Amino acid sequence: MSVGNSTDDLINSVNNTLKTNATNQAPQQGSEARTTILPSMVPSGLGFFGSPYQAADAMMTPPQIGVKVGNSMNDVVQAVRGVGFYADQIGFGESSNRLTRGMPLKPLGVNYFIKTGMTCSNGAQMWHYMEGIPKGDALGPKVQKVMKQMGLPELKGLAPGMIEDVKNGLDPAPLMNSMFGSGYPQCRQVTRQVGDAYGRTSDPDTGQNWIGDRMGLRGTMQTRWIQDVDANGNPINLSRDQWVAESKRFNADGTPVKAQKKEGFQQFMNHPSTVIVVGILCLLAFGVMKK
Image 1 (cartoon, rainbow, N blue to C red):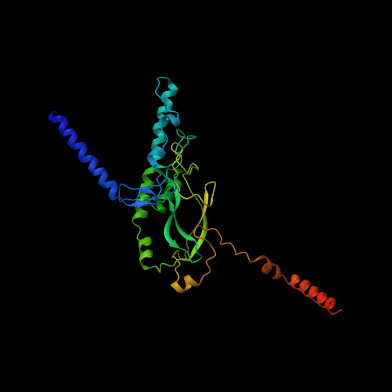
Image 2 (cartoon, rainbow, N blue to C red):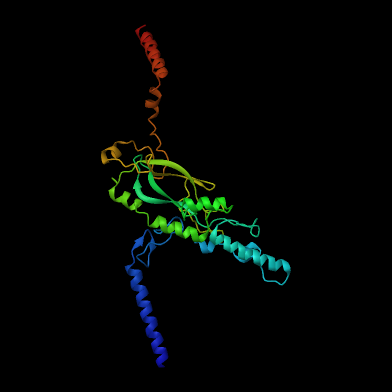
């Protein structure tokens, strides 16, 4: 046996041992054997880190926008348009000039609802609406106004979208609300757009779901219960007694709780007309028996 083969066998043995230990020690979620303590994406929903959407994968490739290798004048023109396409994709998220006009340019990103782990006072599960599609306010309202005056589109490209994500990530309001809130939220029902700007809710190539639970989805609009807010935008929280006292009219999935059906005879006797008819029949029966 050579030294090289002995070294390879030793390395393989160590690797197999590490894999076996990781599998045996990994926590389980349902019937799934996990090989890491970190949460992972699941096919039917969102993971701990949100939607599995990847902007790099969603960006159109050169062949999809008509760019190809060739030596004709049309190939050269399409290549120049391709450069303009990616420049607009990064900066504006839509066409900013005649060169890219008519090309399939839309902002990259995905909107979706994510579970908060909290229950509304009406019994429904509370969600939070995540806006991954850039809104164009990365550099503030002044820049938005100037861009409009110059006849340019809003900054909804990939780069401004990253700035928006950083601003949202550094916003202390959600953390402060969770720290000082009562933990007993009042909710309101909303219907919002989900999926990407192209109207897709899953990866067209792999079929991977981008928005998690699809209940309440109608096209690209989805209905959920989210944290209610007052006129100033502050979240409305209740005391424990108020939260408990409110009727739990909805199931956890947001569907209305069905009224319990009463027994047939009891339900039959609840109608006033039925009671009158039964009373008359009893009187008639009593009269016949007396005769």
